[in-house]
Image (cartoon, rainbow, N blue to C red; front, side, top):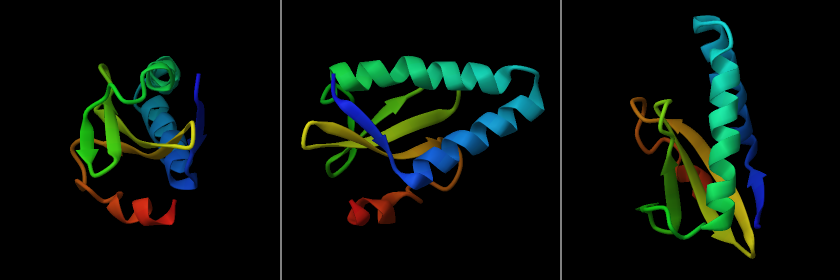
Length: 100
């Protein structure tokens, strides 16, 4: 399986979403974390199977939570650019793609 590298921004988004969900309902943040952990092996195993979001950036939409994982495939690794909420600020993450 390919290695997954979280950008600092994606790591922060993950942690913030988990904290927010835990404030909304007990253990909801833990369920969010579980869904992310279950989604990553799919991306690692079949990295090119997810639809293209823009350019070389692909997306995996979570099934239970309104988030999508935005990533690129580079040198046998997955670079996770953003864990983006689907209903807030579309394409806010685009400027991150030039930093890779």
